[in-house]
Amino acid sequence: MLTVKKKKIFLLLFMSLISFACLNYEQEVSLYPDGSGTMRIHYWMYSPDTMRAGVMDQVGIFNSDSITKNFSSDYSKIESVNVYSDTTDSTIHAELEITFSHIDSLNKTKPFSEANFSLQDGAAGQKVFSQFIPPTITGFGYDGSDFTIKYIYDFPGEIITHNALEVDKRKLIWKYTLADIGRGKTISVTYRPFKLKETPVWIYILSGVVLTIVVIFLFRKKKGW
Image 1: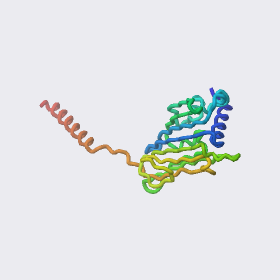
Image 2 (image 1 turned 45 degrees about the horizontal axis):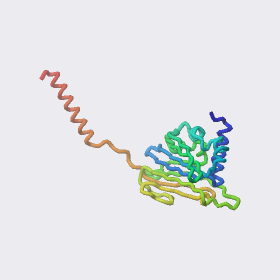
Image 3 (image 1 turned 45 degrees about the vertical axis):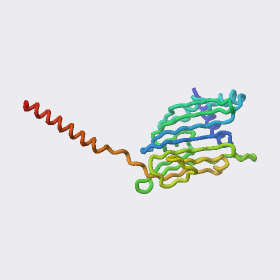
């Protein structure tokens, strides 16, 4: 069971590893019309055996139980966590999938406390989404160009405007080196949500026919026909 101290250390180490250009990070979000959705996160770093046997295993940013505790909230749920090592390049990886009731609610999850997720009404029939990517630190002559942060979003509607760097069919992609982020970046998208599927007309027709047959049957039975 995680102590309060270990939780604080987890968050501190997680944020500092990103800030000091040690951790690659990829986040993919599928958003649904009502603002709920799923998020898949994959982060990894170089981790020789000596490091794996030490602070990483003890503190928990690559520990399934710690990840579940820290990324959970009353408005989101951890569906799966997978932690593994790749011996071919001495890296350690963590993958997790989160479902959330509304994307704004992720702000209540500690690792996203600075993300400022926002999904608001825009012009008539439009939605405006944004997420803040906090600034990073790449001092001591290191430019952070070897490490990347990537965001992939799939929106349930027609894209009106966006500041994505790449577009792959329905997916919008932002990819930065840590040095690119500077004082922070903001993901911004305006879209017109698809209309929820309406009940097909033939369903109403069929229901009417069935109801008529039932009424006729009951009427005949009552009359003794």
